Image (cartoon, rainbow, N blue to C red):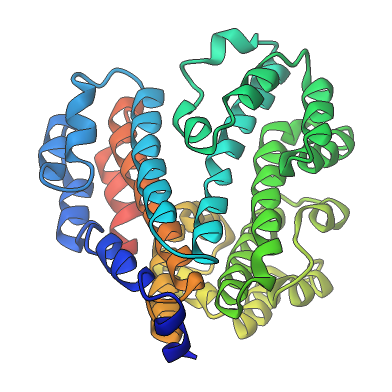
Length: 355
């Protein structure tokens, strides 16, 4: 299998190795976590993949500014890589960019719920992904939506993955209006994984990567659902019914958290790692660490994919760009923590264990 990838996708391996060489080192990340000021954090990142991006910002004034600049940088990296590798890797990598467009849909949908006009959102929208995908006209159409129903209809007409996500949201949110923001994020995240899932037929390595994403997504749903005491009917709507986690967890969702954790850990070893990072099997702590742990999980998954399929496989390349995206999200979170006024002790406690 490995030799076949080398022959068919010779140009892919060096591109993946080049991307991996740009990852932040553990020392850099630890220094970033321990930084006491925004200026300290920017100094840590000088000479790295993110140094010039943050320097271009000048004085950092908003979380949106940091988020869009770092994400635009990631978009360019993925797009450049996709254009320089052969098929099917090119299509697989370019398809990943829909994730950033879906983030734009989240922003638009939430603003419509709050009654904000689309024209006031231009500073929050990441235009770079639309430029890379050649979809500025689609973004303009979505920004003109009158309400969430109108946005849903436009997305369905476009056969956009977020269309079915918002359709599900509009149906489910009537029974659980208190979870509106969470439901939008969750259904759209689900639509991204389901969109990627159509690529499973392209190559076994891609299928293997997506199966792991599905399991981690479902872990998020099950643990949060159990903590927040969401009814199983709602959890059934949110999970993706494939992989190893969902069939096991849904059967015993109504049982004790201890039983649920034991059974799910038997079929998905990453849960044991999450428990070790959190230092406890208390549901509240596990849910608190789910976000930060996604960085560790994506790195472990990338290492596993490359060891199993080599850097010449489409699935390993997809795992590499996924990890780069998660690394960028970690940088965004750690920089924006200063703007949010989060305690450095809290940041250190939450993020040091994942490095």
